[in-house]
Length: 362
Image (tube, rainbow, N blue to C red; front, side, top):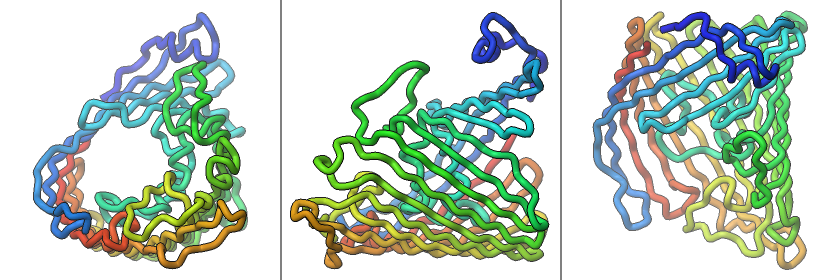
């Protein structure tokens, strides 16, 4: 539903104090029911299995208005099923100069490069989160992100994304508030997307982040990068993505039988995934996806040298079969996901999760 022509002084005073501009306000959302089952065990002594039924609702508020110079300003806030803020952002579109955005939970630019969706979700949704899906996620809050206009080139387009975060603490900072306690200092990110009129899309993305405390804290700054290729031909599409994340060197290697958390654990993460999707008709699609995400422990910091520790290396493996059927505003989606070595833990066990969801949008 839309509520037209409301004077939003708060939105306008962001740019011009004391003036009010007419804006369009809209409310959108979705409602859904989800049933899921999970079998297997994580290997940590506690069974990870059972079944459950619940809701999956969402609600989003957005407002947009045009300035005197022709630029537009838009703001949006989304809420989860638990009535918590999922994301909030403000975007200024500057015509032929592109647009800038800032906010919380908006994924920065990494969301354009960190995974390939199948018929329902990305391969790791609902299970072990891949390191490729967390590239840039530590540094998407409290930053400013620029999107350049798409430029035509050779029958396709090229688009540049740039981002800068003064403090990489991954929390929402209200206007004017600073935080000098974060583990990371400034972070930068850049991405490039190339599309072809022949159905091929290529993307490459990289980020760096300065670690506060220097070598005394762990070892080095953070670097992470990913690239993907997607090709669509008729009803069939194929996607491939690989990523590399370097979180530094520890004084001693993390044991293979310990869970690792991407962004907290030191070491290297290398991920590779592919997705094959098929549109049976305008309403029904199916897909298959497989991913391998390897953790390479890095030790030797206290000795003044970097050395890999092959004993602690672990690969998490995911497979997902998905299907989606839509009927106007209603959809039925399902997946079956299998995960081995949960948590980059050689004793992490194997789990199988099945989910079916009924969704309604409004």
